[in-house]
Amino acid sequence: MEVMILDIRKETLFRFLIFNKAVPYHEWITLYPIKMEHILEFQQCQEALTLRKDSIFREKQILKMDYLDFIKFAFRNRTLAADYNLPLLPFYYDFLIAILKLACGSDAKVGYDASTLDIFVNDCTVTNPVFEDLRKIILIQNDVDFDVDEFLNLDTVKALERAQAFEAKKNNEKADIEDYIDSLAIRMNVSEASVSDLTIRKFWRYIKRINKYDEYQACRLGQMGGMVTFKEPLRHWMTSMEVRDPYEKLKSNEDELRSKIG
Image (cartoon, rainbow, N blue to C red):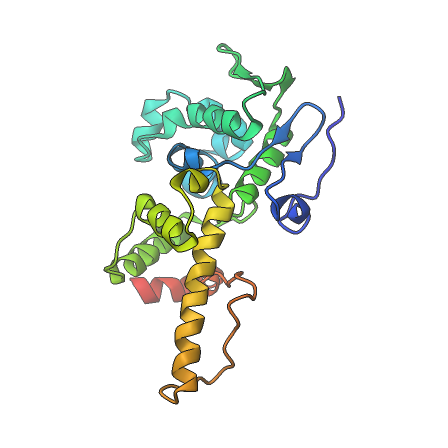
């Protein structure tokens, strides 16, 4: 069996992403973008794909492990979970199985060996390199803001969490996923069933695009009425929604990060 070599980045997967197409990894495994009907299950399980293993754990044995091997090692390991205050860690293996079942489609056979914890998709063993590829594709397909190859030391991870919590606290307006679903259904004049059938990635892109349109219209009206002026030209609401990571500078300068958030 020879796995198709992919340069797995958003740019190389773009032809699949724009119209929510499945990504054929090889002849045994095809990955489908997850739909909104499974948003809660995916949100619960996705942290199993985004654990910063090399940042959090100190044991050399763990640091030398591939990510999938570590998830197997952590399976039902309540002592390790308690030591690092990660109560759900023993269930991350179950989360990975659930995510693969969602991503590989209803026709795929996803299973595992109870003794070795080896994972199989359509009788194909998911090796460590294969898993890393699948992990990257699933994160990109479902618009999860996480770079598998980015390393941050533990102090920086904790500092970023505090910074993000501080930013969230400043925003008093709260909305849960049901609020977003209601809002999109009303704004687009579609049924909840139609929203349920959207992919997670497209759902959030529509939410962001609507917000961008509203902000552009408000700024444009204010500018035309002479009430406000802007130092920079307004960016049209149809332009790219890619934004710079607000914590990019903080990630690259840990001393500055610590001084800003204590």
